[in-house]
Amino acid sequence: MPESRTIVIDPVTRIEGHSKITLHLDEHGNVEDARFHVTQFRGFEKFCEGRPFSEMPSLMARICGICPVSHLIASAKACDALLAVKIPPTAEKLRRIFSIAQVVQSHALSLFHLSSPDLLMGMDADPAESNIFGVLGKNPELARDGIALRKFGQQIIERLGGKRIHPAWVVPGGVSEPLSQQDRDEILKTVPEALAIALRSLEWLKSTTEKFRSEIESFGNFPSLFMGIVKKDGGLTFYDGELRFVDASGEVIADRLDPSRYFEYIGEKAEPWSYLKSTYYLPMGFHDGVYRVGPLARLNVCDCCGTPLADEELAEFRQLQAHAVRSSFYYHQARLVEILYCVERIERLLNDPEILSTHVRALALPNALEGVGVAEAPRGTLFHHYRIDEQGLIRWANLIIATGQNNLAMNRSVLQVAQRYVDGDKLTHGMLNRVEAVIRAYDPCLSCSTHALGQMALTIQLVGADGAVLDEVSRP
Image 1 (spheres, rainbow, N blue to C red):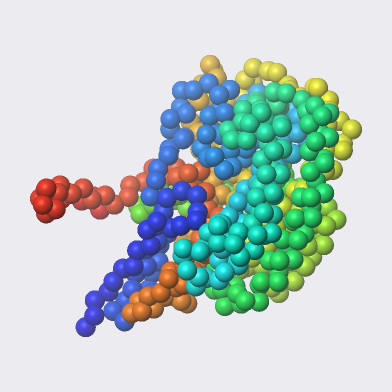
Image 2: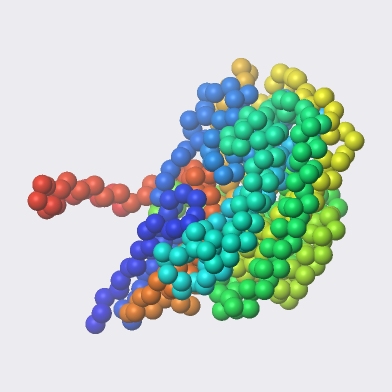
């Protein structure tokens, strides 16, 4: 009788960070289990201990080169809480612009550079062509649009923060420098083209959907909860708001939750086979409390976007499925709706009469020993939680990253796709690419998220000059 086997996809391609997928087959070659392993460890919570809290925003921005602004903002908000200050209104508006400019550039990277090869050329395309150069050859306008949208977001970050990657402009109490009129006017000039690209890209993506009906049905298409922060009126927001959970039917099951009390609603669990923590909705327990965050979740939990073009697209998006939009394939469309919203919102904020005010920072000494900062990163809700001593030194930190909050859903999605497509007796590239593609739909950022303190299995081999294994030690 045939023995059970394991298929390993290592590395998972076209994502940020290092990971692998293992598919466990039964004796008949059918997939019976699947796991998404994150194989790198960063541990920012530990090595920031003993540092002055004022260093935290700039330090935490170094977690990631793709979404440093989100960590910068969540960290600064936690420090605002330590100072116990209300930052100036202009500083808050500038932080909002900074935040959603990063959403635009990050979403553009995910959709156009990492996932569009699958969407444009199909899941079974030659791997040598499934990249941005293949997209450039087959649809030059699409490739240029993706580059232009990313440039739009990055240039805003550079004009506000001084540089595109790891800016230190957001500080405890506000921002370090006001916005100049020249920079404001230069940014506004780029808005019309960005709006046109977002609308054009949405039409292209929606026109391709019918080709992927099978993938839509199996790419993480299962009941789960969804979580995000919303404004007091239920509107979409990336900077500040209250936590809301909705169920798979789209019904709100928990609302107006204080984000600083996240530990009352969100549980964390480390697994021995991954450095990525898993989170779950605490009242429902580890197995039943699976929830998703990020673009798909945000559009499921909000009542409206609050800008005219995005609200039109949101209404159309909600017709995709009869309940909450459950298929993780639709993360792609949700990203473009959010890009549209962000461009509209940037234009509105830049035209605010207060945006050029020079009062952009509140100065204070620590007035609290504990602070929590929460914001919506491109990939979902981001929590920074710090405790300091009387000298203002960090004594404890906890980060809950969006990718970790999607971990249970990603593992369930990998299993669903593998069971639908993978034949252990006759493997093809298209089968395994679909398993990777469902991970790409979530757009995980693994450098951000590897903070678990558990152990992974480890094998050390002593290999001789002739290639023979002389000795081996394993840790289960």
